[in-house]
Structure formats: C-alpha cells, structure tokens
Image (cartoon, rainbow, N blue to C red; front, side):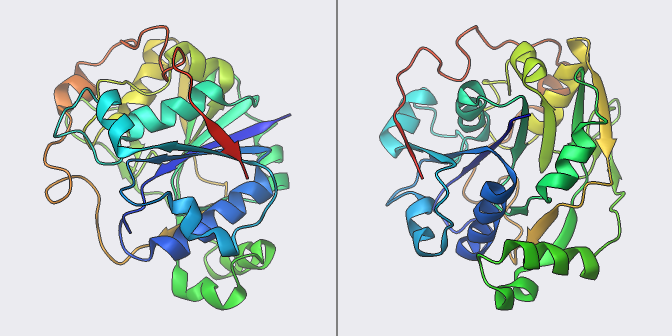
Length: 284
C-alpha cells in the first residue's frame, strides 16, 4: 500500500515560528509517507523549502512544486482578493499528481503519526468513506530540544506528554452537518478513488474559509460515507499568532451558503488540478 501526503504553504511566516513548525512537519511526513507533495504557493522571495533545507531529511520523497507569484496570479484569474496561499488550487495540483493508494491532505504544522499506526488504521477503513481526523496539540518549545531530525523521539514524547484524544465537535452554522470536528482540514484521508471522483477541492473557493467542510459535503453528495476519527495520534504544532481566516492578509472569505449549505456535487471540470498544464517539479 502506497501513501501520499499533500501539503501547501507560503514562505510568509504564517502564524509565527513557521520555520520550526514546517521543519518538524516535513521531516515527519517523509518518515511516514511514501511520497510527499509540497506545493509552495505565491512566495515572494523563495520557497519555504529552501529556508528549512539545512535541517530537512534528504529522502528523495518530496515532490517540490513552486507556483510563483506571477503564475499564481494567472491561476487565480488575477483576482486581487484570492487567498495569498490559495489552498484549493495548490492542494488540487498535488492531489492530481499523487500516485498513492490513499491520499492525506494536511497542513504545514502537523506531526504525522508513525507509519505502522497509520497502516494499521487504514487496514480498518472503508475505501468508500472520506475521513477527517481530530488533531492533538503540542508546542514547538516542547520538541525543539529533541532536534528536528529525531522524529521518533519527537513522536514518543508527544504520545506520552499529550495522549488524550481531542473531541471538539463543530458545526459552522445551522444546517451544517459536514464539518464534524473543529479544524476538520488538518488531516483528511481517503482512497484515491474518492478524491478523484469528487475532483479534489472546489476550485471556485479561492478565498479563505469553508473549503475543508465543502470537500466533506461533496463526498456525501457523491455517495460516499463521511466519518471523524479520534484515535490516530497526530499533532498540530501550536503557533503563537492566530492567523486563520481573513481580515489582514486576506481581505475576503468564501460565501458560506454556497460553500456549505448550497453545495452539491463538484463543479470542477475534468482538468481540475491544472492537469492540462505542464507543471515542473523537483524531487528532494
């Protein structure tokens, strides 16, 4: 069984301490997954990957795609309000090119679970269900002394220090039965056939908010199951600044009615993920 992880980010110190969080994250991802698709979107200077290069495990598992500001403008049709790190487009680029049997869409500040833990859990999962996993939490100050590359020690520490499950359920608004858990987009996992049937994330949702809930509703609309999981121990690395949503960098949010209540099957065209565009990437 081949597992793929899809991650996007931008070299903008989102949330503070992004260098530290992203280094732990990507080192844990290459330790767990067979391939990691990292899409760097709209970084003004250079890709975040180059910032963390000295402490990155060199495994040959990272597929590194750089979407420059100029190309990002084209892909968002020159919309000045598009999310600075346009997650739906960036994730779809990775989802469309991933080659695994199961895909995990996750974030740049996550410590992935051990491979054997994930393998054992996936063996219990239904290939026709979309899963969202509830995160646990750890602070970067707790794990920095262990070192960026000592991922097994970092995980063991996290498991012992913060073993409790997080059961923070959530509905975004009346009529929303699809978010299920708070921060439902931190670790979304499904078989490749599910991701391809629903055609990834909706590419009209180019502003912040609700895209992760939308993709979960889409799974139901396309006839798949939807379930929250709480027993996969993966960790969100706390960041000191709450930078989610919009109001400072991002000036506009997605329409909640269209994204959730009024959403139905996918509106993405067959070439979702810019599959008709030649996109260059390198392997790290």
